[in-house]
Image (cartoon, helix red, strand yellow):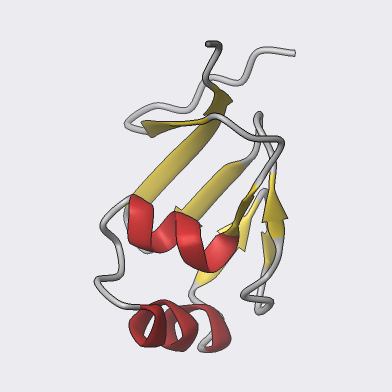
Length: 79
């Protein structure tokens, strides 16, 4: 299934998933783990169409994550 989101950044991951707090740091939305925790627990993150408040949420390829005006599309990096 192809997902097309206008204005989205693509983040390629090598594993099966990336945890939500790590994704926010990797995508430069949060500079520290504490900042990522605050953003997530504040209810500012949508995974798909649902608010996610779990830092350890496993984000898999094909997922769309929204934080404010930032939209991130997760893809699998083939080696």
